[in-house]
Structure formats: structure tokens, C-alpha cells
Image (cartoon, rainbow, N blue to C red; front, side, top):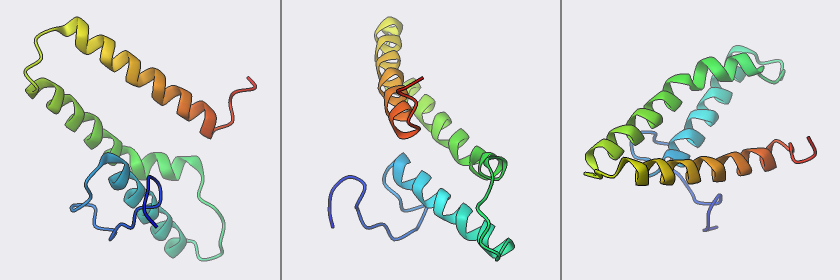
Length: 103
């Protein structure tokens, strides 16, 4: 089982290689905590995930900003273009995952 989305992870947040792996581990941890606190099998609401995942997302954003700062790139316009392109790609994937194409 190799390939994007099927990689075997050991569940260690600290040893995860990518932001995607760290976020996946955080989501699984959120689910485990929620179901430990609510054993009746009711799914968590948006607020639970928002609260639980906030520090993980903040950490990833700050790490990306620090990486950009230390990359030595002096051309702010090039950085802005690159970030805008990545944002557009992420938005397209989010639309697809949330089935927002029809809106």
C-alpha cells in the first residue's frame, strides 16, 4: 500500500515528514479523544474539530512562513505569485472535497 493517501504512518506526530501527515495524525487523534469522551458513537461537530485542530494548523502556517522567510528569496512579487498559485490549487481541491462545484 504505497502512494499518496495510502502511505503507512506510525502515528507519531513528531516523526511525521509532511504537513499532510501531521494533520492526518491530528485528525485521528481528535477522533480518538472525542470517541473516548463520547462513547455513544455520535460524530463530533465542527466546533470540536475547530478547537482541536487550531494549534496544529497554526503551527503549520507558522512553519511555512518561517521557511519562506529563511529561503532567502528577495523577490516579493515572485513569492506572492507562487503563494497565489498554491492558494488557487488548494481552493480547487477543497471545493472538490466539499462538493462545492455546483454552487
